[in-house]
Amino acid sequence: MDKDTTKSTLNELLKVLDEKTFLKVVNVSNLDSYIKKLTAYKFLQLFIIAQLNEKSSLKKLAKQLKDTEELHTFIQMDAISSSQLSRKQSCLTPRIFEKVFRHLAVSIQVKMKGNSPFLRDIGKLLVIDSSTMSMSLSQYPWATFRKTKAGVRLHLRVVVTKDVTLPDQAVILPAKHADRTQMNKLIDVDSDAIHLFDRGYTDYRQYDKLCDRGIRFITRLKKNAKIEVLNEQVPDVENNIFSDQEVFLGDEQNRTKMQNTLRLIRTKDSEGNEIIILTSCFDLSAKEIGDLYRYRWKIETFFKWMKQHLRIKSFYGKSQNAVYTQIWIALITYCLQVLLKLKLNHNGPLLDLKETLQNLLFKPFEVFIKALFRAPTRKSKGRKKYDWNREFQHIVRQFHEREVEHLDELTYDPIF
Picture 1: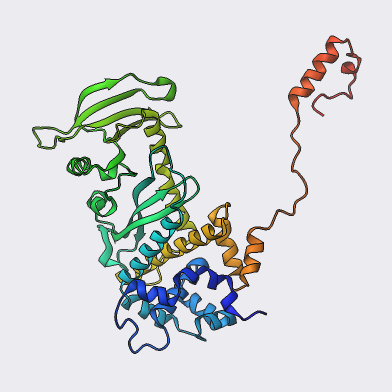
Picture 2: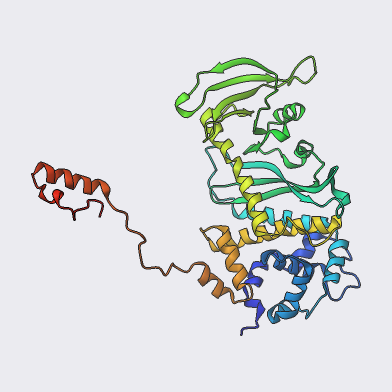
């Protein structure tokens, strides 16, 4: 068995985040003072492996390290107890791993810079949303959400491209913090970008500030909104655009009326339900705006992928540091996989790459590449589709040419 881990798939995955890069990014003096065994970087490596293998506990991670000879060589450590891992997870500040995530997110965007715009003059479509991880109140009292419930919320901004969804900016807080309170941290001034978010971020004062700063955004209107219509365009019913209006939002009596006008578009989703869209974009057609809003589901798919294929629903530790650190490392693991996918120009689903990583993590990188790009061995073209129209035309032709004797035979079946 090949014990040279410098040529392993795991080593290639972490090449963009070697120890030198890690220490430079986190920029914390005396990070590992008086620590000889479980350094912060080795801790990160172990937790990335735990995320890739979806380990359910620190005990199982410690067992893998104890039993896997290739992991001994790679980490340069024979064993570590689950209690040592737990103490390290609680004492390290999550800020360290947040910096690493931001570094990787920027690296991905640098690699993606040459890609063509998402739509016309739009350089980036940035989708903003949050996802809550529910927790036991008795075990996580610091994350009190409701009277009988605890939870943390991942507030996230992703870059949506035609091929992949990329995490770009993130905030992790106890779930009691409302979505709209995090808008300032998730929205940047970028003339090439459109920010897309849902009704949870409704805040008329914030909308005015975004308009004043020239930030383009698309969102949805709440049902109880006060609307003053200034003018209206001709509807485009063929493209499911039933109204296109310029409006003021808010109420003067309540001092909530906006100073800037927005565009209100009524359309329908794929199930025929009415959707009322608000936007500061007056340069795009109503159909383009309606089409862009439909990409909001991409962030929902991202959250679903993370919860299904990485460990962010159940946690290894009970402290705030432990929980936040685990979520940041899950995001780091996702970014590393995306960077590897871009490096290899892999066009398949990210899940294919992730599962191949799981199976071949300590195998030579050449073995991983061959497995990832292996052509299907199945020679059959699959179940043959029957040309019913051709068969029908044949029967019609036989009828017109009076070749109908066989139709009276009991053994004839036009289906077979």
